[in-house]
Image (cartoon, rainbow over all chains, first blue to last red; front, side, top):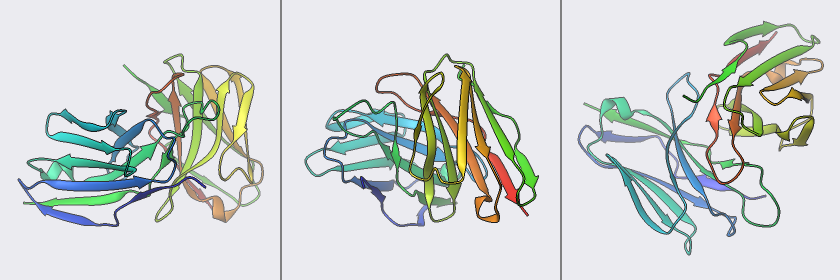
Length: 115
Length: 112
């Protein structure tokens, strides 16, 4: 079974620090990758998506993709207490038929940003 | 603005009851999904649908069925609820192609 693995948490960082969240995937054919944030008791919301190797920046968030190493990461700069949440990594299945938008999710990493 | 709604935020049912969870999206999306989320197990796909009346099993379909009679509505049915189906149920939708899934607020179901 194709898997998405996230570094085990919880991860605790001080306010203002860089939080680094990591994810590996087993399906070498995966082309699209997503990071979702989920606050306690709420549903996941999209933070970023990335399709190409390299970095993609959006405000304080940077997604990094390395397809050769099958590795995706999310960096949060200047972390704030409001960033405290569970972060889910997801990959769209690779080629070999239509995926119909299916995603394989990692189990999530709990991030706590303390003042 | 993207909008996915679910019929209930909290639901309490008895063992053996038939349970209907409704999901509606107003974005004209073709693809719709039902997940359950449990601590330590992450999001697990139950069923998905890529068109009206079309459905495919996900990773954990046992004990569930689905219905999609209209494009905007995707229903999850627990034929005979059991205590191990106590969970958070999340509905999502996505347009065709390489794009993201948009989630509803979730239904926390408790089966007593």
